[in-house]
Length: 122
Image (cartoon, rainbow, N blue to C red):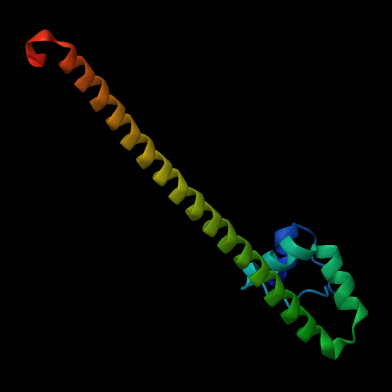
């Protein structure tokens, strides 16, 4: 019986009811599909949404929920990645400018020191 549990029952670690509403739309061999939907909407909300529509529309509702959740998660990761790369670029540029300033300052101090030696000024 445990091998026929749907992805929702497996992920939520609950006892598999014989009338599980998730089984036709979240099969056990595609657990990532339910994972995306569960992360965005929550299992109880998805169950309520599926129960509110007629049975012939539930497949379309499950597909819509999956695609919306999938792209919301992927877009979020892409935005975070873009922000990370943006700030990493700023950080590298800041460090490069700081190093350039430090080298100029060090060179300037060394030149002042060298020019302050009497041997080099004459």
